[in-house]
Image 1 (cartoon, rainbow over the protein chains, first blue to last red):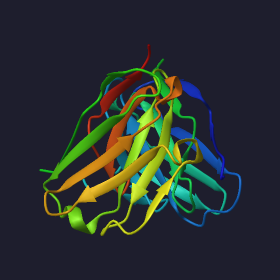
Image 2: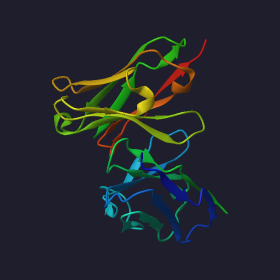
Image 3: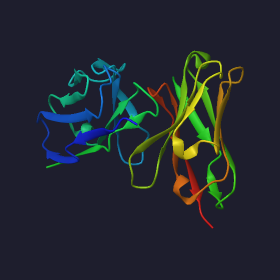
Length: 107
Length: 113
């Protein structure tokens, strides 16, 4: 199975900050990576697919980059509604695997 | 509006069975791979199983192989998860997802005596 390791596991940031979350795959997954956002008690929401493609309706302050085994999610200017947990997901092979999540909290 | 609405969760004893349903609307269901993803209380997301557009291919995580079966009814826009031989570690919110892009709100399954 491909292991997905996210860092950090949590972070504190202020509104307006630039935030970067990293996801590392245990083997190459090409660009077969998504990012999801989940707020407490809610369903996940897809943000990015194919490493860098924004889902419809996702604000442009979110961006994704990387390839192979190293990937990043960047929020250019954190907004109040962005405080949530973020997960990376690889869909290059089975079983699909998620990172353990990064909780973004208010400083 | 895209909607995925899960149902069928509840409390079941270890060794018991449960069938989850997911009703899809607002998109062309028959064109999508469909997945079930679960989240144990206070934990992260775990992919469980998926099925291709016509139901001819399915994949499962090892921990549910031989116990869980995914199937679909494209005429009714419904996805199912038949869960047998349930264990305490299967306790989770189960989400229905369209190609891991579209998501339902989930249904809680609790396995406990």
